[in-house]
Length: 250
Image (cartoon, rainbow, N blue to C red):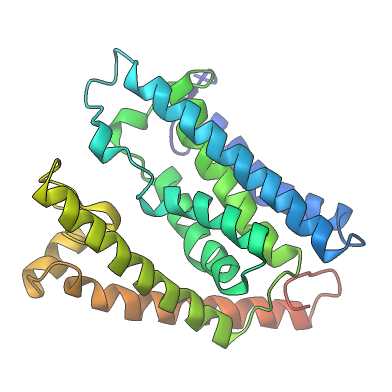
């Protein structure tokens, strides 16, 4: 049914094509703009995404078909949610390491969320608040992250890739502190960034059994992520050297 959206149906495919082609179209239109103009555009985009996210969460709180809503589990501390906030900060204060994080970590995290959404976000009416909020915010996170790179606002190299994973470690540690505070006060199941594990994910469950220590069990993930972003960097730089049209390796 074209009026519904779920992974790999027609609506999802169209959204996927749009979220990965729109950044290239925008980059082409902004190629002669100044750095300040590009940063301003991204500030507006990330701010608009934050507003959409807020409307979406309010909609979830009053959605009778979403009974699992828990205020303390809907705070902006999930990886994709923090990317929105970080996008605002990166564009407002011109922070290249945060831009690299939004690109190297934010984009794949958002796409994985679209690829494997929770059951509550599968087969939704396209025009429902839940569908627009979930699929729309994640798509915009991908657009934002790609634009930080396509606008040439930071240089893609092995150093910036490594810094993005370093920032990922810092963010995970900070969010882990938030989880501890929430667990000791109002939300005993808090596990933003999955620093306390996530039983529904086979890989995370296996890692936690191997290293049964909150946060520290993620160390293999950080190393694996570093390898992935370095491979990604190699591919992007290789393509950049063989394409005059690319914006990545400015």
